[in-house]
Amino acid sequence: MTSKSAVDVILFNGRISTLDPNRPQAGSLAIKDGMIADVGDGEKYERGPSTLVIDLKGRRVVPGLNDIPRDLWPNRLSGRRKQKFARCQAERRERVLSQHF
Image (cartoon, rainbow, N blue to C red; front, side, top):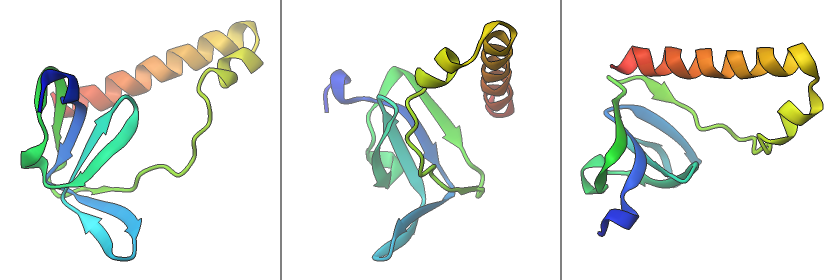
């Protein structure tokens, strides 16, 4: 793999629900460009300098089934609601990252 094929996020050591009847659970998940790139063995994913690696410590992950364009929500909000939405997104991101570092 080249550095161009390095994934953005690796989740490993978890119980990942795949919703695939042939393989209902996996131990790791790779994300690239906001999409699930692969499910399976975390050791085979190439890590780049900015790859976020998260040890799930046996926790369950259920990938979201909705694909709502993120840019539509803030545009439908006005003034204070748009600011609150942005603040909530930032707080949620910080909370998730602080739990892993």
